[in-house]
Length: 291
Length: 279
Ligand SMILES: Nc1nc2c(ncn2[C@@H]2O[C@H](COP(=O)(O)OP(=O)(O)OP(=O)(O)O)[C@@H](O)[C@H]2O)c(=O)[nH]1
Ligand SMILES: Nc1nc2c(ncn2[C@@H]2O[C@H](COP(=O)(O)OP(=O)(O)OP(=O)(O)O)[C@@H](O)[C@H]2O)c(=O)[nH]1
Ligand SMILES: [K+]
Ligand SMILES: [Mg+2]
Ligand SMILES: [Mg+2]
Image (cartoon, rainbow over all chains, first blue to last red; front, side, top):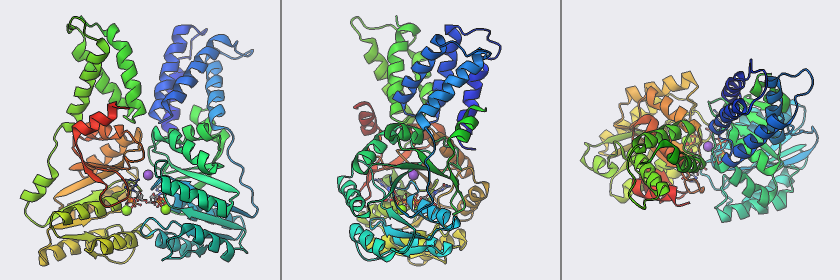
């Protein structure tokens, strides 16, 4: 499911190498071009793709395949390594008391993922509570409250208080006895200066151990730029990719990871609280390349 | 004469620019290919610059895509028998509910009356969200309980509009993935039984290549009459608008330019091309 289309097209590209006895420049160029297309179609940042395909080309031509490795395996190994270079290892999620702040663009899935995350920790035996610090989007309070009631997760919110910073402060106090405190924030983008500033103030008050940037799997070339701005502003420690139950391939999220060096922590694969998985980098790339 | 070799370099540069503007690769390749075919073998004015010729041809090709089948929303609603019923559909979180609020504001400014239908009975807080907008805008919202049949809610709103001589029914629906067959057939049913005058597909300008896939699927399922592209204020170049217009053959109606009620801009092809190429 996850990026399986990208995997398919990569595998298609790599098939061209089957039977190629030795690597000549023409074959490599052809394969690299196909890999480029696959990555571009998956919304990986254009500049990142160009840089990466250049490196694959050079390495495929220059590096001698390890003993016993045929040309095809050799190029697969290089592509694997280059993707691994971008994705890195998945985030380590410690099962201990912590505060987490959720941030991201409008509609990316922060509130839904807040509830899913609380559920995740609760299942691991930790007491989780959430704070509704989105005072901007109409209905945000009700949305999170309803989700928490269904899951039996502690909820803190102040329906008529427009001050998200104050709510965060009050919420942390009210949830003092809870192991896990998750702060849901309003959606915002890099050009909304007031909202970016608000996020910085929430960050200063919450002093979260984790700052997860929630990214829609369908986001295109804006991913890098937005992630860069969020990272500059509060320092992103992890990425959550949502809506991977659709056909989007998540290359934007990969680009955000490349930009911020923040690892991917979780993926969202549906609207219900159960549709949430811990991200596994090795499995992810192996599946990507069909290995 | 321009041969395909002269064209390659400038076309490649432009194609990269389009990809960086979030035009989907498949659509970008199709458009670039058509420009290449069109220009190959044509004569170049003495002193003409190949790069400029190519850019002009590409702009023209894109303009053709985004202005195909355009219709003037304002003219349409003016002439249409009332009440006019508009349903908003799309995948999760693109801005359907907010766009309904913005469009309500726009219609009220033109002295039309509006009733909203809380047809998203699925997502937590969805009815509250639309209800807050309705209160702020001073319009009536018809709602049932969470979990109720959306088609029934919308039916009631249409009856209400007819009974109270309201000009417009704007119906919200739950966000749904085009891969979710159940939810897609539910949407198909909603649109069939409530016989809307317009079905508007809402997607976001920050979307990348997937915009093609989901627009195609929604258009297949209902089909749609036009699209709204939101969040273009997030510094998005909005190439997704071209992808969607290309794949559906339906007009782009509006852009969402922010979170305020005023932030709905009627689609203007020339303005769009201008901002796409002036980067
Ligand atoms: N199919 C699918 N839908 C999702 C997923 N995650 C979230 N959603 C849906 O996406 C929409 C937006 O989710 P929210 O959680 O409200 O997003 P948000 O980032 O909190 O939005 P704002 O607070 O307005 O910025 C809702 O319809 C969610 O149900 C997912 O993994 N898959
Ligand atoms: N910056 C910006 N934000 C927008 C725009 N349109 C909508 N939003 C925001 O995007 C988020 C999601 O908008 P909604 O209207 O709830 O989206 P939806 O499609 O109804 O979402 P679901 O019902 O959950 O599928 C909200 O935070 C909106 O304020 C826009 O044009 N620009
Ligand atoms: K989104
Ligand atoms: Mg939210
Ligand atoms: Mg909605």
